[in-house]
Image (cartoon, rainbow, N blue to C red; front, top):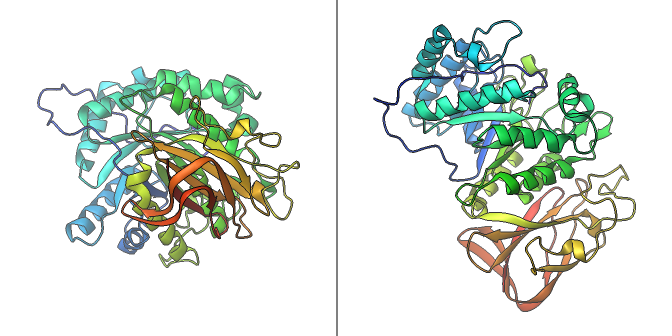
Length: 462
């Protein structure tokens, strides 16, 4: 999120004895969650009302991070929810806990006088509209990982129904983060070492990463590589009882300090659908409104809490994700396909693209990672290299789902997928209860027109 590795939040937390703690259900993600950073004036109810109208589930108060701001935000949400005006929730962030200078290890953060202050503040904020607390942003060192582990464990002990939220570095930290480069290097394996170290030390409830692809000088070309690495590590570290949810923080606004430009609506949609294709269960927009402390320009709202030109389209995207959410929560990608042309382009204007493969995809690369399972034989179209196809499987059942994403952000595309068998039925899925049959006893799926940056979900019944 922010490139600064500061100690966040209100979270540090507490060693109260277990006795006397009410028994509540541990936090567990039940549906696709959509959030956003930046809320403008925390005292202005109009910001919250408009954000709720955009079908956003939660906000993160990542503007100034003061105790006053977090408390006031909680009170504002409490008041609005009591009036039954909104369903908006929050992940609270507070970076103001006193800590010894240049010493960020847990033994100092957990000094008793600080512990009591932390406990009091968290108790003050413990309300139903608070779904979690922001523990740390872009941790780097073993000391920070150990600190996160202890803070998260205490939060889960004292507030079992709250999320202890951490956001990690993106892949390009190997290019521009001195701490990251010092600890993990800048070679091709550095990010894998970073993820391994974090996941081996921290029992994470959610794996969250921010990646901002649209910079002023072009497009970062390792977006899909980052998503693939995250999927691989989730596969590796998840258990049969718990698959780690993956959240992506996507670029919505311009930031001079981060040297990122304002993306178009197709560019926003492309980030979202690509993340879902790789198994993401949460989307966080950065940022929702103009946020001076982060040097970010407007997102879906301007500084006066008025909707911008993308508000309605972002709301429509969010509504689609929520309709599909109950089904998407049951699906995981088992194969992700990127046919590519010889120059590895996905942009019509011949910019260097965002590729997953370094050569043209072969027949073998269309095959599923599951032994012996081959779903898609070929992907055809005038610009077939602009297709992304995620083959998704439910936890139980033989049916398969194909999420087809148009990677072009400039032009609509149509694709034809050749399957390796005759499917009993092929259908377009609009939500868990609504589908439209496209073919019976056929091995051909015609996607129809897919708008720039948009994805469509299809059911394949064997």
